[in-house]
Amino acid sequence: MESCLVLIVDDDRAFIEELSSVLIETGYDILSAGSVSAAADIIKARKPDIVLMDKKLPDRDGQKSIFGLKSLSPKTFFIMITAYGSIESTVQGYKDGASLYLTKPVTVEEILEALETTTERKRQETMQDDYVANVAHELRNPLSIIKEGLQLTKECNEPDTSNKERMLNVSINEISRLTSFTEDILSLSKMDSGNFPFKPQITEIHAFLEQLHQTLSAEFPKRNIELILDDGKSAIIHADSNLLTHAIFNIVSNASKYTNEGDAITLKTSTTKDDLRITIEDHGLGIPADESDKIFEKYYCVQSTTKDGKGLGLSIVKKIVDMHGGKIEVKSDIEHGTSFTISIPTHKNDHEAGGNHETRNDSR
Image (cartoon, rainbow, N blue to C red; front, side, top):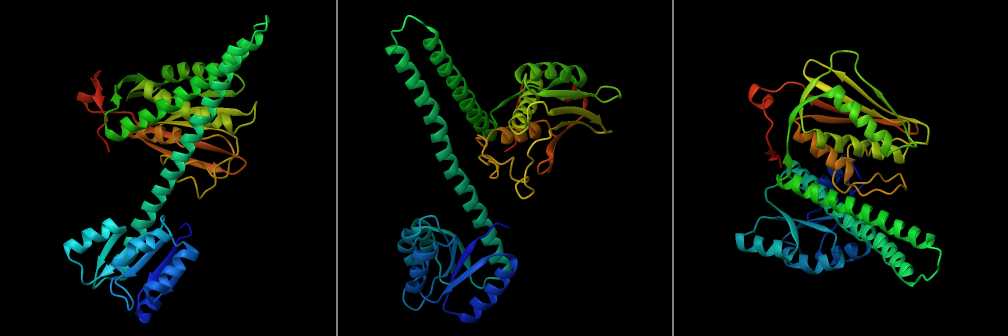
């Protein structure tokens, strides 16, 4: 697990020692305090990720202290442990900044579960905060380029129009990038709400991939994109070919960023009794093992690369695969490359197989 600093605030030393032993063994870093005033000093100096605090403390009421303590470290999460909580006091505690309440008698297992829940919530909020900053950066930079380009074009009085044309082309390219970015944000929003149009049709996969290969080769002319089709009979799947194209395009686009020019990016198919498998393989930088399970999360960008990323593309891929009732797996080897395998069911019931209709993605 990622490092997580937990401050336990309780005047029962035996409880602190017993709980600390379990939490340290689980992987948490632990600090402790026996009073609100001692906790305040630690929170101000160390900014713990989570504070696990008893309500009844020698110097002050723990719950009534949350608001003031949280002001010392706004990103710290507070879990209250109490044997005296009423509905009214619990509601007030949440208003003051508590994240969770545990009622005594409380087991170590319940505390571990609360910490896991809070750690995940903190991680998600951190990712979203980082993403808001990234979005602002992604919007500001191209807008500045567009503004500067248009201003220079307006002020340019040279008879030679080549500079004007160059600046206008730069602006057009930046507008295209912004358009793509906002479309990705809107697509994810619709997918999350279950309102994204899904139009599955009978699709012959060899013809689909051959067409896709032509499109990708034209889009990425400096990349050696190979297509290896299964020697057996081509699979028939029930798929939204536009969405499936979008998913594979996103993966190939990522691969092109991390693969040297001339190195192959391979698309190949295989079939089993129940599904079609499309594997996209590159020989690029690879993804660290401790990050491979996070890359499909919204907003997540691989930390070990300096390449430009927005944390949206692979999240969209995962949503599209889920809409098809499939799954996606990733295997990676640092400095040797990465492979993504999309598995799509090859048979549907008679009602679905005959469909050429629009449905909505209701998975949430």
